[in-house]
Image 1: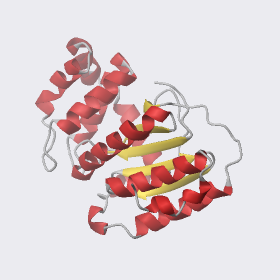
Image 2 (image 1 turned 90 degrees about the vertical axis):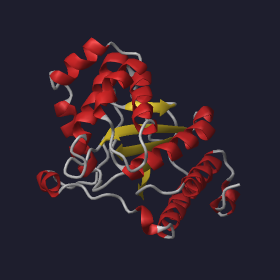
Image 3 (image 1 turned 135 degrees about the horizontal axis):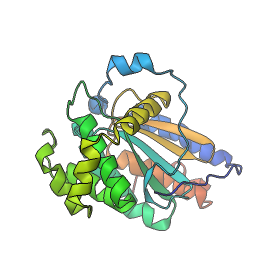
Length: 249
């Protein structure tokens, strides 16, 4: 885990225009990917500040931790839309993470009333990360999503195998999970998600400098790519591409 040292440097006006395009892209996207609704009990307990928690050492980051474009996702391992969106963000990182301009932060937002096993799966993932580090966390996360069908729940009996596959000791993993070492961390992540505005999954916050925008639900790859390409081009000084990148090439 590595914290991100975000700077307070001025962001070009073109970036702000880019966020306006993001809003348009989301508005005109197919609404069949409506995010799942979080439980009302948690909603009542958390003050709604719409404030995103800064990146810190508790976060797991895929890509350059100091990337100028941060994709912060609140996700549920048993959410069918999250499985679809996980593949989308992996593809985005494969294409743009290598340039160091885009990083993906995965945060826990299990919807326990809809997916009873998801809070425990989140604890398991954080246990793996605490034992094996950033790479182990991401390997474990990928295994969970890749090893189930989109409409199936995670086979929790396989979690110890996934932990081993991620490179951590089975005994250490079981001790962490049985000791409920990560229970408070999961509850804190749910609170962070609510404070950031999450009410369902996947819920994504795109941050460039001091500007931010929300992507609701599992938007298709073409939509997410269009947003990222637009911002990458602006960061590279190619501001005349704002409109042309709305259709990915």
